[in-house]
Length: 139
Image (cartoon, rainbow, N blue to C red):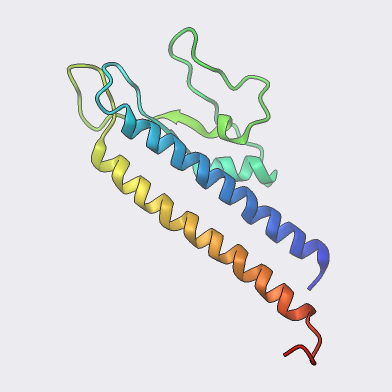
């Protein structure tokens, strides 16, 4: 296996792992604020964030800034900032909170499974590389 190809593969999966971790943090924040009046749930477009992080496609997404004081994505090189958006509310709520606990729980579980799969892939790649570097006398 070419060293550059190996490095690119591991870099890609390391970026994916970092973004999965950030997505988990965002989902956890939504869950923690489920009872906060006026809280607007956020979500990350994982595909757009991964494209921005790996430079495979210029992202045109931006962070919505409907209120003064919210962080904007202008000038930021953070791939998560370009893929952030506010979650579309599934139902109206009298207190203005847009967290849908069913959606958040499902997203949390799905993201955890994908995080674990990415971690296993990285571990498998490293193990395969280490096994390939052993001499035939090492077993």
